[in-house]
Image (cartoon, rainbow, N blue to C red; front, side, top):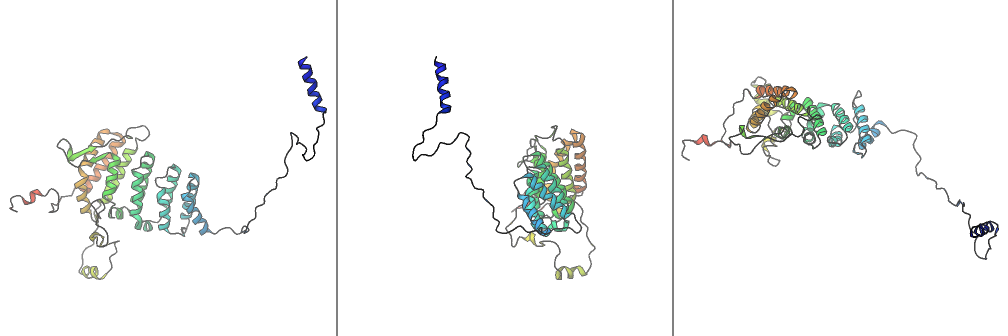
Length: 351
């Protein structure tokens, strides 16, 4: 009985007319759709120009995209710039200085494709226009070589090889570009020199942990690091070509303008004094002296250990050993008054 009465009441609802009251609107249906909205139009203050931007504006726009947050945009922007630099004649309306200022911070980029494209772009730059910016470039190269990521470290070696190929001789004679890269390469290799040498070790040589050496993925990094170090030492210890002296050289040296960049920079007249790491080592003898004083014992000990590893590491160690013999074979350390170990100079003299 209860179910039949309920069904009768439901049927009556379908035929009941709603009672309309004065001042109240008619109830809306369940499937009612509101159509009272209005579409908004976009008004352009300036109509689009039919003429496309010129090449210079496109170059500047793509250069600005190198700082984009998207990896794809950064890679595509570098690819466009590389294409413009590889044309004949090269298209670079902003100049090498401005271009390097924008692209050098991308050396430790997190994207592998961006770093590869950056290397291709750098290889298209003229060597003569890169030489004035060696110190700035080395800051970013050293940052990439000592990065926490092993992939970025490996690409840092690629950047190091690039700058050695185009301006290696000028690089080793630049301020802070001899001792500091050596310290970074020694740190990456895991070869360090202790401050207080002990009798148990050769020249105070210690080995820092090299976590990636011997692993399946990064085993090739250690031989490459030694080969880059060997190339760096070959350029630093390269014998200097000297022209025969004539009587006219005395007058020309006084009356002509020096052609080397910052010829009196070693005096430090207008700059703050440099420490040993930031010093300029213009000639081969100075570079040999500081290398023998701070790095020679550690490199020799590291080469001996690497030769015992065999394989690619042993072959790279043999190349590094040959670079040491060629560069330091004729080295004779001159004892100077300002050296640290100069106690033997005054032996027998009453001060």
